[in-house]
Image 1 (spheres, rainbow, N blue to C red):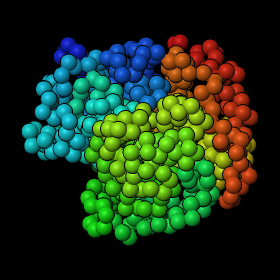
Image 2 (cartoon, helix red, strand yellow):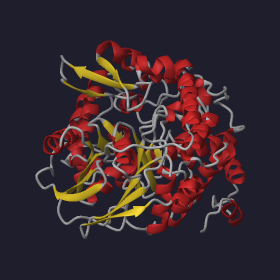
Image 3 (cartoon, one colour):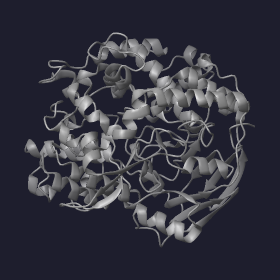
Length: 601
């Protein structure tokens, strides 16, 4: 067996039992690993209609075949479950060091079942595993937890943990690793908290083999060369991080402002990656095996806010500044630190606050009910509210349910800006129509990393697509969604697609695993994964009506910018998308399509 570690660890938290199982190589061949294989296991083993916070839900920590190899940017691991925020299939992807360490310890994935009666940690040490009491860690934040584990176990252990937000079942709680890296979206941290699992700590000293060492080395060097020679992956991300996008997206007229009421932010320069580098950057930081180094080590050393840590990324800066109508970058940096320490998704946290601010602006929520003047532009109130959300204190308890539930609670669901109960990321689709279709059809709810159409529509990668036309966007979405599914499942970072493409990825997979992954076979595996995720959601109760967008984006034209007057013509794109997917008019995969993909329904 090459590239894979060869074993799965199954942990029954209810009974305290742990067993090792042989890795299903046949299933891995069909679903690659990581996201794909985790989805198959979840699909096969749980009832999709279950409450995601019940013990019957499962939490799968998975790696891909490239995770931990010498392939560039191959540090990724994934968390697969039924999302606490959405009730849909969830796969949250994270870098850092945990994934490679799990493979070196001898396991490709961990399947966590049931729920412990009391808080526990799972300790994995070179092929052995045990559950240990963690009552003394319950209540600690992420940084305190990881420091305590390193003191107790040794600094060579790599950790995944939850903070108070996960313990208190905040719907958008994250699972954190390396203190600052988040498996952030869809509420995977709340699922972990519902299982009374505080952390997983792993140490491994083993190695991995690849099927064709010389060819694999050549494929790695080819991919590395392309990433270094590409402008974004070779220069821009290292210099300014993902926040290099702030000015680009704002100039394109698609930077959402005040809960998507506008899409141009006049003081965008004050929150840009360039300004972040000038004011707060200490140094770039890379995940294991990454030449890009998009991570930001930052410090707040004077002024109202103090602290140090990593981030914020582009999406975070937007959610904690422009989306709440603030240009206070220091406040966004501080709020990002709080989210990391408490273990929360920064996108959902900021977007939920923005939704509440609009409800206040319209007089639907009395401002005094929020307890801290939660109004557009009040960055100080936003920072204060982050702690209240993480601990479910006061009005923070309301916001901890996410924007969809907040808007519904106050009888204005139309003010929720998202899809399938997951809040939008930082692109207004009225000015980038492919992203509108991507948001609507994303299996895990509104998402930018299930098919990053910003690459062709705004950045011109691999070639420029007109962002203002619906033509061709269905086929483009399908290609990007299937490629991304394969990429995630392989265990490699999405950012590689800004410098290389499918041929390079399929070469890495083929030479690493020994499976005959040419480009067509790899894309077929991606399509298989996407269709299985769709089937999970259909069984969970989702339907065509959930593949939609808020009324604001469908009916209210953009008031200014390059896309002035535009709305999203979703229905025409969606009908073509379903047809090209081989689905019926209600968005259900046909029997013929499932048979061609060798999926049993």
